[in-house]
Image (cartoon, rainbow, N blue to C red; front, side, top):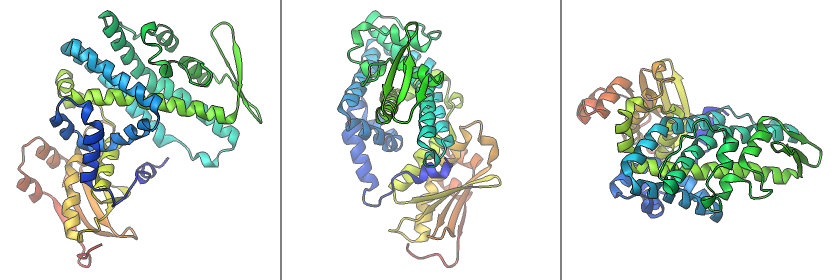
Amino acid sequence: MKRDKMYEDLPFTSDFSVEDWNALVKLKLGKYFSDETVLENNKEVLRTEIINFIVLFTKPEYFKLFEWTFNLYKDCINLDKQRIIKVLTESFNGISNTDMKWMTNVLTQPDEKEFSERDKINYYFKIIDETLEGVFKPRFKLLDKLVNYKLYGNTRDNSGFDFGKLIRDFPDQVKSDTVLFLEDPFFSISTNQWRNIAAHKSFTINKKDIVVDYGRKNIQSLALSYNDFYKIVHWTQDIYRVIRFGQVLTELNYIEEIVTELGGTENMNIRFESSLLHIIHNMQIVGFEFVSNEELNDIFCLNVKGNNKHDVKSSLIHASECLDRLSCAIYDDKFVKDNFKKTRISIVDDNRNALASATISIDVALKKVKGELTLDQYLDKMEFEIKATSNEAF
């Protein structure tokens, strides 16, 4: 998938204002935050994350599992906040890497519409493997630690556990609450066996069905329809969405403590595209429609259509507020930070012609974020350009 295609798929509407989004976030997610200030400080991230909440909310069994997961973390923190913050911190970089892997999967996925049905099924088996092994299992390991802490008072070292042992040894006391994590809801095949089927290609694609072979010693076979197979694919996506969302809300509640334990934000590894996703989504919420990204030598440029309620100059001033966040997003990704020295936001028309732009040095933006420059000093160093014929309303 082209990077821009992912951002183009973000919903854009002028009917739902930023105030509406903030009210929705507070209404639906407020109860998961112990401090309203923390909710307020994270509202830009939550305006993106609430889309995941809405998906879960429409599926009662998965929403129930999300709330159970979130409440487990909350109960553990109430038992010993300092100890659990340390556990969250020790797991933080590994857990963050799952989001990076997920983003890589999204960016590298091919256009499945060009596939035959057989090739598409092969491709989705690969997605099952990458989802369960690459992003679900690391988060499930953290869940396993905290379940054991709540039940037995210890966070067992499961770093050497393979997927099968994690699932088999998961405490019996909570299996009924977490069965969707442990096995599929259609055929009751364990989660690790679905990973094995996908990873070891233990399947045969026939014209009318798919036969999968699974098991440790006594190999079993199951024939499932194409429709049932896609239900399995959706189940793997849903359980990952559940376990991730419970952990994201927990970590946001205690992100200051986690960052302190980590030794500062410099020791956090954040993928640029993930940060850019939040930036673009929030730009669209306030009326700027995403058009494209451009890499202009050492300048990273974000192209948007202007807010139709304002003229070009007013739109540019408003849009330029994103440049400090855009600069931080580049600086925070060690694979990207050396590629660019400046960031730019351009207002374009329906034909993608630039009407106006604002450009800032990344170093200057970082100084502003760190409080080393006043807003006036920061704006004095920003380069504004407005085309002579573009000072009209959109």
